[in-house]
Length: 360
Image (tube, rainbow, N blue to C red; front, side, top):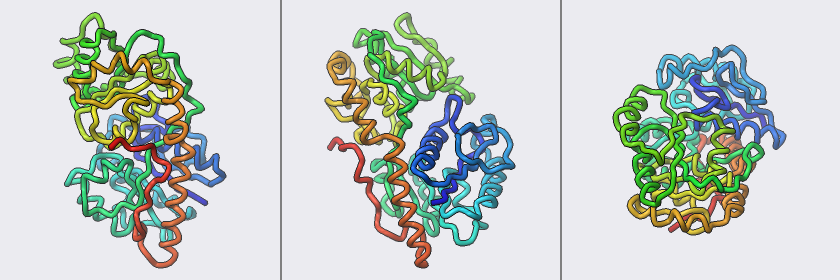
């Protein structure tokens, strides 16, 4: 199969530091290529993903994040170069709404963010001629009248992640510097449990810097260490040495890549049961799910969980090869429907049968 992958112009694939979507696309591209398929990637010119890349793009533009003009120029050029693929998998917001697609090439898109009413309206318009992929059941449950063609959980390339021993004597928090990620709550949980907390966080945007300086920095004490934003190797080393990832998310996060990254290093996860967390963390097996004010009581318990089981769960349910296989199943169905004269996504929802057990 010849698969065209499109990602936005703002970050490289893979990202040097921040960039969840770009990290997922990198793992998908590599796994598709490893499975013997041809991949053509439309991304920033300074990307290092080892698959053929469409030429003619400029370098990544993180300072332009979210700017419509840069995205539109990018996706128009991407579609113009995708005439010889069998299917286009677009990971941008603007691209699936572009009218001048290569004739005869079906398009699928992944919803990487929350399905708020405003976003859901856009995806309803896309669904008229585009197959929609959700990344968790919780995400898709937020809207009832959108045709979702498949729910496919993210996966990791585990060859780059080593299992740590968790013997560092600390817990960690990894995320973005904003209230929704629960950093203040993580500090409170660690303090109540009496364990040091090491914090790694992305802090690019003005509102993120303001939140840190005005709200977070003033409350940090001797038991908390702020490390800034880490590279992937630094992040995995931090996670691998931690007794737990404290991840008390305060919103319905559609997936939460950081949780499977921690589990891949063997580190259990303490989280609130919001968003997709119950689809990732098996309560009492790979971590604990509880309300924020109850999480401190599980910090000692989490040290008795099997780090090998945490890694095994990711290896079975959240690895890149599984993610690629699920996408290939959907691609084949969409191509068949398209050739038969139907629209992408006309078929029945393809549920991922290889997903982890969901906490009920």
